[in-house]
Image (cartoon, rainbow, N blue to C red; front, side, top):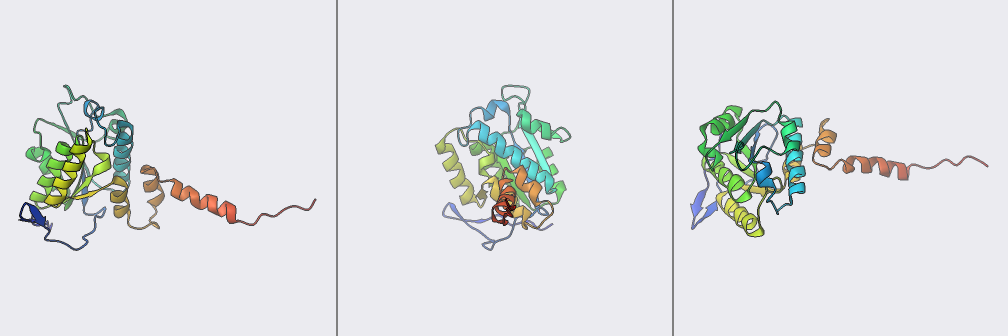
Length: 227
């Protein structure tokens, strides 16, 4: 498995060693979900909790449809942060959930080992909260030689400053920041794929498919029976 060397840091910023478009695919990606727990999601404002839940579930569903391996972690799930929120927990019934004490998931050997075992070279990270649970592991992934993607709208920030500074910090470190729809569609790659309708439905874009039927109905000539 070929991994990326860490970016060269120049004056506090990063000169990326791979400036070309090296695509994210379902074959090279692993999804890391961090701390999507009820006690943390309740405080999210960017996005609001209901949107965060929808986005995280969509990312999870689409990743499963595309065969992307998923690593899930929580912290203090029996304490103040509580369990994973119910809609996501339902999708994770057969999934190992690694409960940890470390702030940064990359400081937990069980998590880094799980990621390494997938053989994937790119890590998609979504976490709550964005400034810690997305930012820290995403930057650590880059430092460990992976390509890193932050699913920013499947992560939750407690205020605008947190989200903005986390995005700046991650970008400077070489993390690619994107919304979950863009990440999923990049992995889908081809709308002729037999899985496309399922993938679009998973991320709430099934109206793209239904619009085709609506357009067909509108443009189909109507045959009027003689009176």
